[in-house]
Length: 162
Ligand code: RP5
Image (cartoon, rainbow, N blue to C red):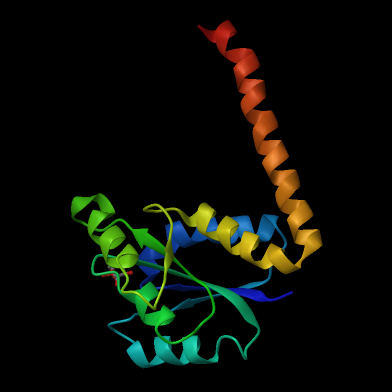
């Protein structure tokens, strides 16, 4: 199976990245995690993106906050699908990072999840890989069914609580 590559701009992004890692583990998807910054280590971020396809990656996830250029910088250097996770910074509750991540120019797309949306980033990566992996697609179907069952269980219980 192709790997998912997760890059974060700083170790301060780790709590959000952990949500993606946990979901990839549940779905049994191989992954690598790196700290490369579009601003502090631009050469390493670029090298990772340029070589990602040859190194066995199928999807890349990039998490960054503030002037969140990481996902765009990664996407500029690969045609693998890139998923951006905007991270909360000290200002605007992450709206700054959301706009910096999502507002990409035509030609260099970044699929952007919600601010702090680590789990959804992993699920989207899984859904991309599942296009050509029926076993993974079955695991995703099972997960959806389990999530729906959990909601219906709460539905059955809610009136008793009120
Ligand atoms: C971004 O700046 C990082 O992705 C992080 O979200 C933010 C702050 O980084 P630190 O100053 O905590 O290292 O590049």
